[in-house]
Image (tube, rainbow over all chains, first blue to last red; front, side, top):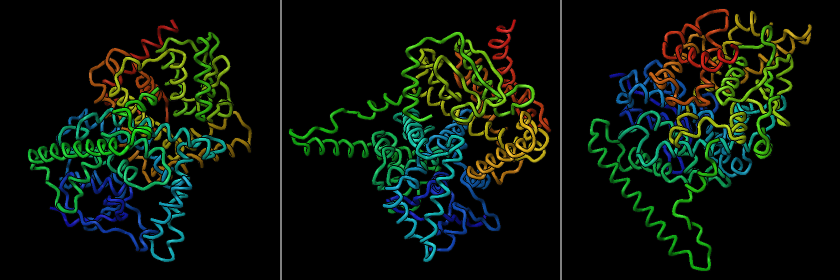
Length: 307
Length: 259
């Protein structure tokens, strides 16, 4: 087996092992494939400025970017995808492209460009995790990288103004969430009974949006209506990132895993049900029942049916 | 296009039928157009032919500056001007012509995902090779792109365009890639498309969709365009089902019309 692997990434908060999408993808994949990775957060070090995250260090080798790191892990025989058919491998690539093109710009906008979220959540968080005097500098730098990325990929020549593309960004992202929700359906994972790299990517993109306390985000409220996607995130967090079970079940014990997953699903469903009943009890008759429809997600999905 | 404008256009579009005088604008075919623009333009033409909507192709040297989004191609139908494949698909749908109505929700998700794969990989790779590979940029892209203009404007515009594309590549993390890595990405993308297509005539069996138009536009253009090296086309040629897919669409939608 290879030398010990160390992963540099942004630290966790909001009930997540990391708040950073790319770091989260690698962390999730490492758990899924059973790779033993030592996590060393870059918080409060000068690497917040100089380092590229996530970065996997294995002996003398340093690998950056989620796709490269996942390939590296596969070469080390930590493969969560070996049960996939070629066709499913192709689907994985396609859905990752969908996430990158449709969801990423809106995510960057929600966290880094939207003034209210940036001032109240993102800037304070990243400033508090950077050492003095970098705390004055790091958040602004990350924000300007995010803004220029949105403008360069989605902006329209010749003016490249952000206000013109905002509406388009969010409608694209909501459509992407709907498509993912259709694709996942009632399944636990995207392919079969065990999580694969596509699950790691979807989790990395969705979990921060789901868990962060964004003061204003239409995208977040849209995601919260898609119950299968939120329980997908909850399920992975409970199974693989639960602090009570620091060692996740390795992929070998698949049958046990499947049972455990079913159990978690059941528990999740039940707790959802209880929550709903609770809500119904709480909303007195003179209040408008704000969850009148059994599945508000379906109703809103129809509005965003892809063109 | 902004959302309000988009909603307005689709409202307006529903009102009128498809006119005979619809035109598609693209840069000059012989001297100016570049691989990526040519591919996007061909994808839109294939899509409109699949829908059975007649369109006249007009080449203008300033097509890029005429387009509302600054991107090639755009169509001029009645009172409306719509650019790029995505909005054009929405536009024709508002007029009652849609190729993807027969698909269910999961298939439609899959179709959109593969379309983004083509945009994310093939289109980006084309842009990379055109503007970030120094040999191609110097021998083909800059001279062709600036061919309608005289010195010094030609140089200014060409270098401005190159600078813009390179900034984009840096922003999405392609700036540090080598040419070999880009070819490898293209291979992976083609492998995925080839797997998805399998032995079916179209991606969703009997009926062509906008995905088929997009894939055809890019693959056919790459196969038929001469670049400084044939490496890009060679990568596609190893997938025989993609080749026969291109030939099939060319025969069905492009040769009948001309004969």
